[in-house]
Length: 140
Image 1 (tube, one colour):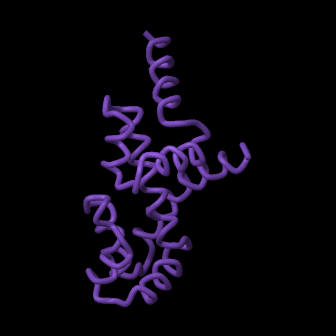
Image 2: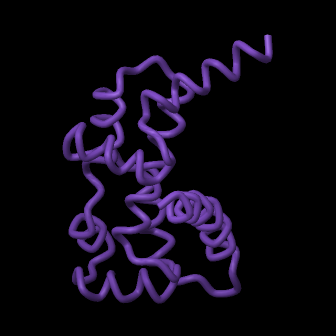
């Protein structure tokens, strides 16, 4: 179980590298670049594959295919990873309540958010925040 959690964190870090490489690659598909921009700048609750497909005038199935072909990961996986990256930044860098963080990143409900966060980072968001505070206070 712990190995899987570490693998997901490694995947998140390598995903960022992969997508940067994709954006800088020789001939990236401009439609996928537009979708990546949409995902990064739209309110998280508005980011769905249907909305992204409509934005670039493709069918949902065609977008799924192009996204996976262009980025090497499925659309829904990318959305989940971005959600967890945003949540991590808010959990460790803000004083928002966990319920507020979940709403801000577009999680369907708090219990699913906490479960996904724990699966992704190996601890609950509350525990993660407590650990970050301990580390910061120990450095002072």
